Structures are given as C-alpha cells and as structure tokens.
Length: 327
Ligand SMILES: CC(C)(COP(=O)(O)OP(=O)(O)OC[C@H]1O[C@@H](n2cnc3c(N)ncnc32)[C@H](O)[C@@H]1OP(=O)(O)O)[C@@H](O)C(=O)NCCC(=O)NCCS
Image 1 (cartoon, rainbow, N blue to C red):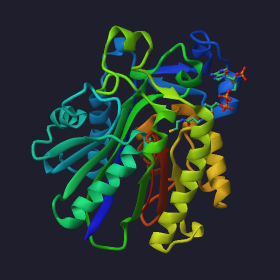
Image 2: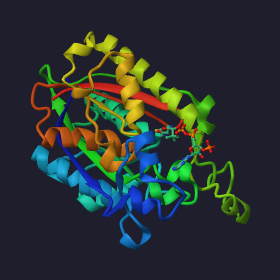
Image 3: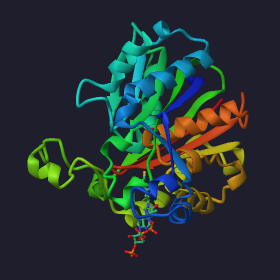
C-alpha cells in the first residue's frame, strides 16, 4: 500500500504585477529581471485585495478535490507547506480545513520554506502507507509578498503569491509515489531567512526599523547551493527508485529562477524539452511552485496516466527534496 495523486489544482493571488510595473516602484528593469531570473510577471495578493494565504490554499484545494472527484468530508488529513501563513498560530491548515468544510480531517502546517510541498508529500505518503490516513490534501501556499521589503530590489523582484494542491489517496498498483528523498542544512540558514518576529529577535520598534520581519537573502550563495543540492537529490531519488533519467517523462523543478533550472538539468544531462517551466509567469511562489507547475502540466496534458514525473526543490533552511511519482 502506498499513495497516488488523484487530483491537482492551483490558485494565484488576484493582482498581476509585471516587471515594468515593478520598475516604477524600485530601481530595476524588465531586462535585468528577465536576464537574471527568467521572471516576466507574478501574481500577488495586495493588502487591499483582502485575500489571505488560507483563501489561496482553499481555492487550490477545491480545484484538486474537484479533479479527484472527492468530497472535502472524505479527507482525513490536510498538510499546508507555508512560511507565510494567515497568522503566527493556529496553523493556516485549520483555516483551510474550515473554508473547505473538511470536517473529518486533521490539519497542520509544515515549515520547510520552498521545500514545504515536497516534504508534505513525503509525509502524507508515509502516513497513508502506515494506514494512519487514507485521503490527504497536500498544499503549498504562500503570500511571500507579506514579508517582502519593497525597497530591496535584490529580493522584491523574485516572488509571487499562490497556492498549489494535490489530493493523495491509497493505491496498490504500480502507479503513485515511487520514491522520495529529503535533506537539510541549518548551518546555512542565514543565507536565506526572515530573522525577526520570533523568539530570536522579538518584535520591537528596533526590529521593525531594521526590517527584520522581511526576507534577507545572499543571492549568489543561494544560487550555488540550489544547483548543487537539487542535482544531488535528483541523483539520489533516481538511485533509490532504480530509474534512469531516460525513464522520466517530465521534470518539475522548483520555479525559482530559469538559470537554476537550466544548470540543474545540465548537471544530470536532462533535456529542457522535458522540463516544466512557468517561472516567467508566476515568479518564485516558494512552497506553491511545484504543485502549480504539476497542475499546469496535467491540465495542459503534457503528462497523463502512466507518465513518470520527477519533482525537485530547494529552499530556505536550507532544505531540499525530490520525489518521483507515476500518474
Ligand atoms: C538573485 C540573483 C538573480 C542575483 O543575480 P546575481 O547575478 O547573483 O546578481 P548580484 O546579486 O551579484 O548583483 C549584481 C548587480 O545587480 C544589482 N541588482 C540586484 N538586484 C537587482 C535588480 N532587481 N535590478 C537591477 N539590478 C539589481 C546588484 O546591486 C549588483 O550591482 P553592483 O554590481 O553594482 O553591486 C541570483 O543571485 C539568484 O538567482 N540567486 C538565487 C535566488 C533564489 O532563487 N532564491 C530563492 C531560492 S528558493
């Protein structure tokens, strides 16, 4: 017994923000952003839009449930990978549970930054394998712009707001989650983090003045580690499942940056034609990025039943993970 993806869905923030619009807010250009990242636009949830993270998660979840043909009451588990939840506590997953009317589900958040969705997939699969749960909704959902410093051009051009979801159910045939791999390295946490508002640097007039509640990033070091770790975890998950790169019908990498995606593919000789890319339209949506890309691939019929998909992600922590699934 293991688990299988029964349906996928995604929802974006309501407001489109193009590079040209960004260049009127901060000292940047469309040319710089496109050439360094591949990003052309992103969807965001502005404060005046009145949309919170659990709204995006519930929207993505509803579409995934509809695609799976499953009623919310059949769910017994909801995991939301997020670092930008509705509030400090309780979990964004419980607000999502309430909005979906998933009256029979346990619900909790998982904090692994961009890797939150793939970590959640591994966990939900393990819980279904043990028989503890039968039907799970795994979501990656973020409103990253809620902790962006709009005066910091090195970070504010990168992120978008969205959620992506999959429904997992029991499966006994040769499809489903074939293998997963996950790792972390907290020694490098300070290369990509939000230091403020926790017990480390408590909220104070000083912490606010220093913008401690916003994302701080050392871009170059993040880039190098992202390529190395994603390439390594792809190798590890292939080894674990006994598959070769040629057995993979579609690679769904974390959509942080086109150059990271291309460099990762180059490292293990994987063709870009078989790689899902939508970073140009969404920017980096953190934990939402992989399930959004998977959902688009399914809805555009780039992949279908029987196809093998490899997902790989890298994020703050650092955390990184890969999963191979047969649809
Ligand atoms: C962020 C990133 C695109 C920056 O590219 P880079 O080539 O490393 O650029 P640098 O940070 O060295 O900056 C180069 C120059 O561009 C400038 N710059 C930075 N952001 C800019 C922007 N948005 N617009 C215009 N110029 C910018 C810098 O100030 C610097 O100028 P200087 O040489 O006069 O000091 C790149 O490091 C990256 O992709 N890192 C990974 C980020 C990521 O994916 N994070 C999430 C992982 S989950």
